[in-house]
Length: 311
Length: 311
Image (cartoon, rainbow over all chains, first blue to last red):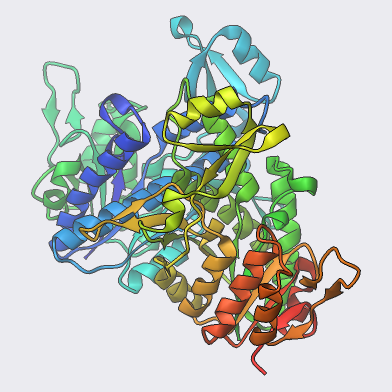
């Protein structure tokens, strides 16, 4: 059985999303203990991961050093985090596997994700990123082609396109390595967003891609049977925040779609995870799961978390 | 025939080492035209590259934003440049290959390079990196474990370890992809430096690795027959800067070692390239070459550049 695990940003940072290098390294080390447990259970694993807090840091660096060093575009920031998170995962996973007596090679593939240059996100960006700034600063940055929105008391915030991922362009390399026995890290941060120009050429583009939606297309591309979305709760919750709140266990795609339509999942948090889990199973995947990092092995075997399967 | 091309930092930046995102992208696009010509000539190619100017930019960002965002260590900076340069190469190379009607997949592998934790560079760092600062700033940073040196009129500069590369830890993944037909980019910036602790575990370490010396060990690890070090001159020069200056063409390792011993190659520029080219052939490689980006195809076939071969 091949399983793709999508690790949330919370698995990569310290408490409260704090992201010093030491905190990131420690959080990744903890996450890899759980991943190594899953590998040791005899499952073939591939990994993808978020990068929100890390990109947030890079944007601040861009901003504060722009008078000396040319800022780099958002696609470059994503690429940067694939390198850092990627190599930290390799070191930690090597360690965690060795501690379990498991001998498996690991690799990280720099991964581009194709998006549509005509995606509505590019004309109407909606995804907030980076830190809040005072109106004057935000207006100055708006002169340079960025879109900033008034978010009330906290200040202004940049919004960018979050286009639909269409194709994981480097999935082939991930698949080749997985077939050769590697545990592969790929499509970090949802992949580096690129668009195809009319002449067929590929070019990076300023956008962020939802890493779970990207995982939902990476999983079938690399022949994964199961997609596990690891987050900070053990189950998706129906009626979250109401008196009827109840964890969702085993569920069919049709039942989960109904709950989704009825507005049970917040658009900024559980919403994309539910959507990604649904897309994978509706597209022919055997099973997807949403659960906590601690329960990924149980979830893969259908014993924990919100497990989406056809009846 | 498999060839590893090591691209110098000059192939990745604009005139004078300037490194805006646009300049970097354009420089890489030009470099990939030459690489695509080589691929189209029927040779199996792998790529590695430098990252000096790019890491320089990241260090300035670290410094200017340290009051808001935690600085990241030097190994992270190297990892960041593997992501950015790596994906830019993929996009440009895809384009250049398509323009020649060549259908070959491309991939970038995040690559760690093992160095000795007892390398003398760690106790006595000598490699200058980043920008010059006034003495007061340099002394303040020295309080945080960095080594800074008085460089006279220009100010103070940070020096770091540049340890010998011992093993390209992720060469196996590069080899698997190359064997599957991929043109692979790996070991960018000489690889992310990692040390092995006494318990066997791997950890990133603050250092820079000479990308040509790393290429000299990557080449045999991936079964390359030829190592080409692409730089900004067509040949290494004997007697550089003297009345007897003469370009070196075809040369045996023994002859080149003699010129090296006689002090013909500057330690900071041509020296490591000559050393890397020598190590590859002395270690059993069929041929290495030092030449300009424009002449790489001719050099691979022994028709241009400084070509090192056993007699």
